[in-house]
Length: 282
Image (cartoon, rainbow, N blue to C red; front, side):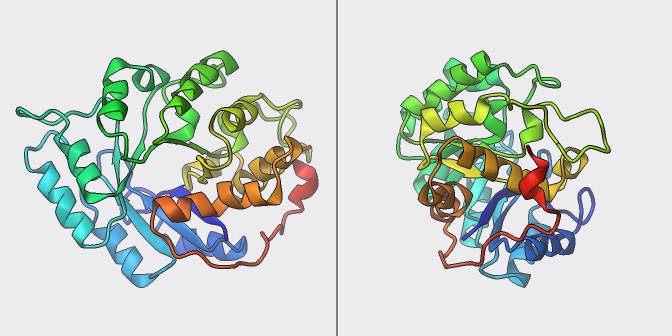
């Protein structure tokens, strides 16, 4: 089973859901987690998409944490079918309980997926969240890279962020290889990335193990990097080269996400490779 744990859709900013589903069909991807984009507090389009594709799409929502009613709004969204919420490491609620939204997510038993910079993830504020809610699953998105320009996210900084694996409730999302390894400048070449690849996936696997890593495409922004197909096949091949077993690959590319986002597990066909990517990432 393959689950895309991180993709976006919209009727006003990104591509409509039909574009995503077409890509999923093309690559035999069983399910996807619609992750609301930052600043969009209207989650109705994602809810419509989930109702149109039941069992195939689920919704992770965003709420306005600056609103005192955010916890109750989150409860309403979860009651309507949302399986997670997207929060930044430094997000705090107004009023006496600054962790009110985080606390409500924990009470509801949902997963938090978190977008932030390395400095935010390494902050005392984020550590406070992890220590206060040890049973709340929290996923660091994008290997913790946001806020770094180009390929300035060094292996040393990555290893520092990955040290958060000491908290058992922390998980890590990885996306396409282009988020951390430079592409070959020759656009006519079949080689997509400069070899050897930067060691971010190796460091992530060492720190979190296959039980707490999960793949997400970051579609459609990934289309401006290496493309949806490469964002799936590239990391899969790179992890195999690092010695990941078939069982470990299955966990990172589907099983873990299905548990965190309440997606029914099932057997699926192998990944389609219409572009011959078995050779293109070498």
